Length: 186
Image (cartoon, one colour):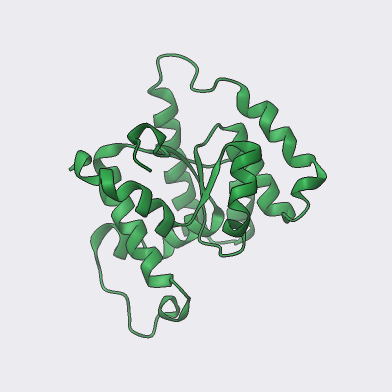
């Protein structure tokens, strides 16, 4: 990607990403060490994903990307039955609401509503119900990207982007897009 304008700036946080930000926030925002016996070390690309999230959010201190959540996001958070995690989700929602309030006019064109309906077609039958709802929300909210920690969903990223215009990215992939432009935000 050589075009700064093509960089995703409205990013929907998949539940897996939101939970990772909650669990590993001390590392992501404060650079605290991760215990040697933490399970993240045994997950393929786990520590690299955390390092990418740390880099992304360091840039975001100045870039002010929009990180979106939806009612379906909150339903998944509530299902975890963890008050701290729920409070964390509300903090992220507050950031999203502030971003929307900063617009002089409507932050949505309405195009996302039409595109989101495409997810009901059989060509997206490979999506589980939860992923389908969250991607539908992300498209409806006119997000540029869907940021996920999952490994399966990004395998269908080309089809989703071609049909819906939204990128499905892992933190590592998003950091690779952002990295060439990171100095602009320092």
